[in-house]
Length: 489
Image (cartoon, rainbow, N blue to C red; front, side, top):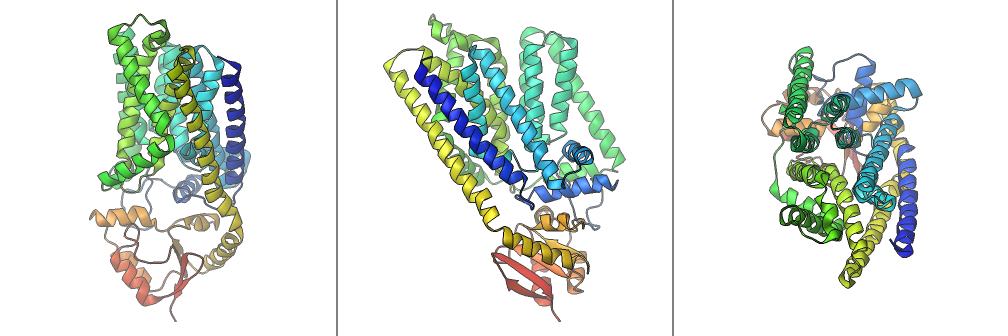
């Protein structure tokens, strides 16, 4: 590696880490919710602390709440909150940040081990942390980075200790922890781990996957039995949302626009990996791609991550479905960087330049996104504080409802009574009848309802019968891109 490439990686790493730190600190210390999904999870932490079940078996009875994910993350945050005695949202965000750092570190370890050069490992790690989606998601009180962290750790253990029985046990535990943090992590990690072990020892591979499957089913069955079927109802039935193929293509297009050169580079390297495996080229520079781990594990991890990313078309899904794929591509890109630098050809210098230009573009995009999201939140802190004061006063009179501002309800100390998006999907799926809630609205039982945006007609959240009841029984005032509803006199 020349000094110019090393200098670029050093400077780029410093800039990414500085932006990552700025984004993380300003997100973590923000006193209110940053993302819709934070409030339901923190509400679950509150339920754990009050020794209430997370998974209701009867969704027709209030409170109208759904726990979309397995229980490990809220229990972990509850434990963190118990030890550190810090505000709830901050405990959740610090947990996510910790696992984000774990993910980047392991990505760097993989690349360093495969390329035998620490600078390529550092480049892969900061490439992961620097992706706008990762940077934003790394400090939210959400489950995804914790699930990814356990998955990557399980894969690393299998990579380094595949011959060890204890290593097999710990890897299995990590993959189970990943799956019981977020159920979509059932595929990529375990699939790659199984193929990797199968390449060396069929019996050990079968023992691994059978142990993972049997223990996972036993845990699922136990939790489901304890909750009287509520676990299955919440994380399976209530999660079967409509799939929209156009949404998959739209989200995929955005990912490609952000990471176009990197994704194309990864695709080329994967093709070269198959070429190096089956054509057995004499070119020594391509021998790095003949490493067993690259073909028998990283390829299949990428395949599993790609399949999981395809489920982003489910209504309500977001860019967090891309995190596994981003992690895999960060490793591929570190390997590609070594190949490009080692092969001293004119076209490779062009590729290197394009890759560095892409890295700078991503840095700029991440900076702009951070300013738009976190920067704007802090600029509007006065609006949030004023709204919070209204909620604090209203909860003294009764139950407060909201969609985009459920965090205010959680921070007031009141449990969430109605999760609009989740129950909106249940309504349109024909699983839930909103009549009971409509009757409460007709009775003007709720002293305050806050709806984000400028319209009540949000098909994702509020059924038409609920909207009609609100229009008939509540005074509606528009304020700061939200609707404030109070009972009509």
